[in-house]
Length: 302
Image 1 (cartoon, rainbow, N blue to C red):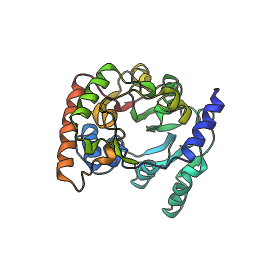
Image 2 (image 1 turned 120 degrees about the horizontal axis):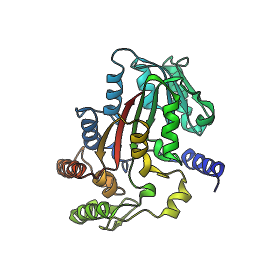
Image 3 (image 1 turned 90 degrees about the vertical axis):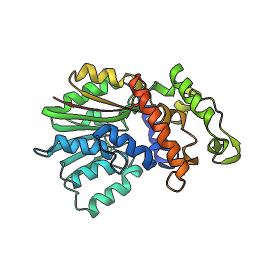
């Protein structure tokens, strides 16, 4: 499959993707507040809010005049940065018009049309070098086929004094878990009651208590860009930005072990579920100390 076929397949997948539901960890307040605390020191409300707060801190002296985001999705976080005055203008690149249709409408309603530009062009061919004060990646860098090349490209887009900011999945490519991932994940799943292992669409069946690697053929067939080269992201950042601040935020348990069953947790209405999630997050954070983390934020000035 050549790059054009990969792009076409990815566009097709995300154009019909149902969106984030209860299976996504970033839809669970207990989890995203935990992650926000690791990123910015405060368990603030809102998915990615800790990441956005850190970017605001970097802009405390003056806003970023021009920013760039690749794979912006619905662009909710980018629009928030413009609304807050952190970014004066944002160039946003996305693969499919359907994905950004509502975002275009929001931009118009908020009177931000002159400050937020959407483009369906290929960012790697279109975005000019040394033209940006902020290069922003949030959930899209792990979809790049060559992550070191993408990080270096980001460095080349930045003006002197500019900021590279990233929040991404940085675990094993194609979700091919390590032996440690499988061990800790399976240990957790084995300790959970069957009610939390039930399969949403088949409540009479339960998920295996053994954490398993993803089927590579299935991942590629669904979206050939999914975690295509994710495991090289952090080394690429260290090589390209030697002074980068890298913040591992875990995920071995809240993502790796709980994928597929998070929708069974009702932490907002069930106190016991909320307490169990907090205990899982405490254990997940301890794993970071031993070098186990599937997600990370990173910030680097040039």
